[in-house]
Image (cartoon, rainbow, N blue to C red; front, side):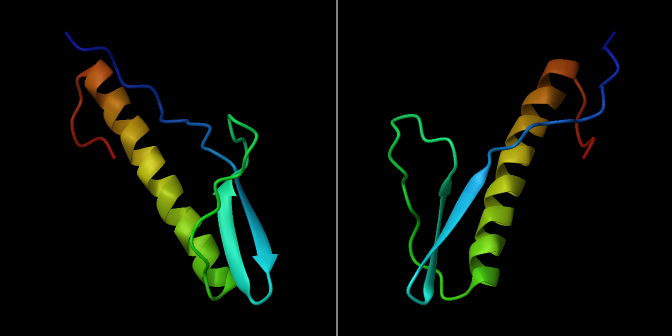
Length: 77
């Protein structure tokens, strides 16, 4: 018998945005080697924040899939 799946609550990565001239760059806030790994330049702040939203959605889906495998449920999203 499978265990009931608990509500999905995940702490997702934090992101940092910097502006250089008229371009915006994003990087994970907590870099393990103390060096920021900046993204390609984005033309607008909206595009930079949308890129972060896509990265957070991917991270959430990966964690949700792992949780569903542990609890034996499919399609709980």
